[in-house]
Image (tube, rainbow over all chains, first blue to last red; front, side, top):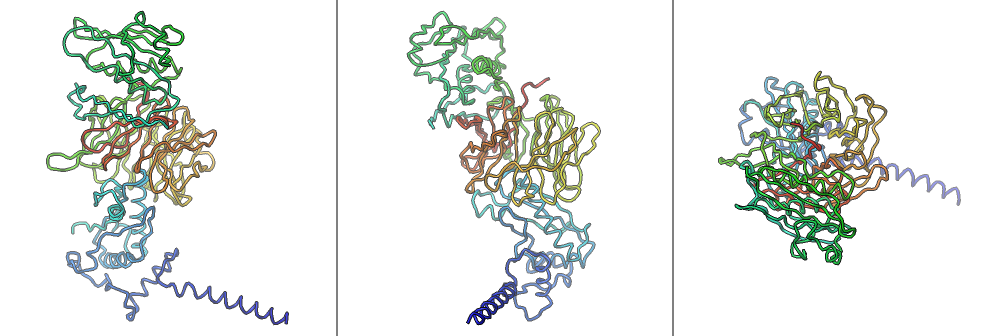
Length: 184
Length: 437
């Protein structure tokens, strides 16, 4: 009887461990702290034709005229951030990727990544936070083949809000990185 | 806490043509345990219009310190103008410890002779008596000087009323475009002078210890760079312009260095720059944000904001001849947001921006006892700056979504609002004691 109990305990431990292993697989596309896996995931999305969640075609195939096309995914040029955070939101990774692919394919085109913060907290810290946000975007782009010298980073902190209100909805719009194409 | 709301309007006082701002001083919070003092309106001896009310200026100064509670005019039982006219017994009945009496006399050259006496009511004798000559344009300055004399005679500490503040204002021009202005004013917000105006953002003014120059951040060239400007000649010079951030300048106590934030080597780090040689010494090395350096007295260390622990907190690094010694030590543990330190001249207190329940407030940490005290009750209070005597803190707050300035005593007992009629006012910094012209 005791032996049987032991088997049962061992068995249940194995089942629990298996359950743990399954966890991350089920959560595919959910929040993860591991950036490299996320990028891998995103790349898989574009190569996997059956994956219907990929909204955009590859930025690599787009020509310069796409920059002025409001229907092009390249027209999306603002990324928003959570409070105190410089993590790119999951839904914005595709936007960064399509810009990165486009820039990697057009090495003569340069951009400015302008980082901003909302009005809360100290101004100098917010300047640093704005820069950190812009540099996170830059890092994700350079990892995808964009050259360092194609990207300039500037932070305005809380000095240039786009929404002038003083509530959560204005703050949400002000915590942002703007992708500005030089000359376009 | 005893709460008072006394509104004193001084709008007729603005003689200076540069001062477009009409200032309202509102005492938003009275103070328990503050010493009652009676200041009798000064006697006006002469013809013509009566100039600024010295009494009102002095009363507002003393109230702002949190250590005095001036009696309202209606409670003054009589209005003597010199010591010999005072009936001490009647003032003792009011339980008022101190009495100030005086007069203003117009001289032949249109200047003023001001006499005043500070009297100890219980001892029935004079503690201080002065006669001061003043021009009309310097009358407010003279009133602050009198406040300093009263403050020092009673408390034994230096007053900081006859000092200045610098700050940034943002106004809209006729084309509805923003103008960013670097301003200087008396410590109570009067006599504003704009020393630099720009269409691009200005930030982070810092006084040189001799009070002749300001370092600040300007976005004139589309990105943050550090400038130094003489406040008298208005001559300015671009001092720091590396790739990335050139931010958060803070003048060293010896006047020869700036602590600052640069991101030229990747992420924001603290450096010390020798102003003459422009030589840089790197102070911090971390993958996190390190910014907002503030000097400890004698240049013995720097306090700065860092998110190396996951949220912005204050850290201290010790210095030997402007070189870092050992690892930076974390100083703040209350809540998950403490930033932008201002250290009192004696090094006893650190004021900071502290987040509590989503609101940003000014808090003070007493270094020795580790006692932590939240002093203000606004939603977006920021940019604390100690008065040179370490007894008051000026800070930026907002009211009806407009930036205004307030002063709070270091014990949090008294708060006084300095607000401006137009525009946003932000980032106040208190001057050193003397501005050496």
